[in-house]
Image (cartoon, rainbow, N blue to C red; front, side, top):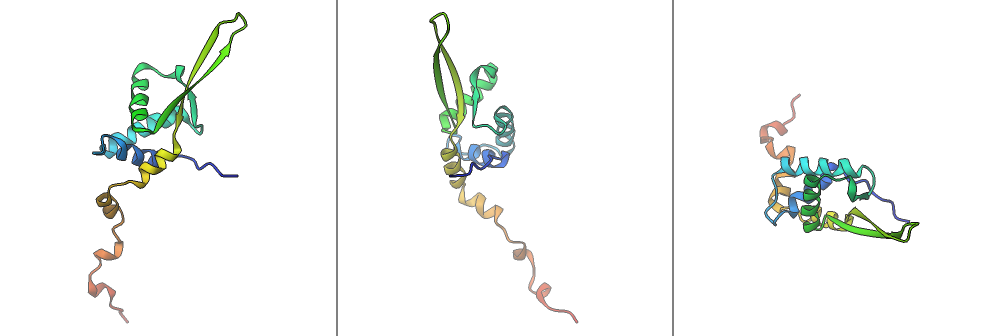
Length: 128
């Protein structure tokens, strides 16, 4: 049985940055968008479409184009015989993980700067 890992704002920010037009998105914008999207989902992987306002739906469509989100629908028959469709938005975790892993190597190098790289040789000398 696999355990579902919670998607964090930082995870989604990185995925968004790496997905937009292959050029990346400004980190602050990506973070704001990630927070906005996660506020709808909470700890769930699926939300119902009819809670979205048109401007929110536009952001969801943009993320669908990048592969971060996808849609599904459910059809049911009402008591009077009419068909009713319910539309949902879902996270595509595999794609999010893939996008997180495709981080720009230059950005990764900047993030992985060691604190020791800034120390001068005389700082390593022992004092008695």
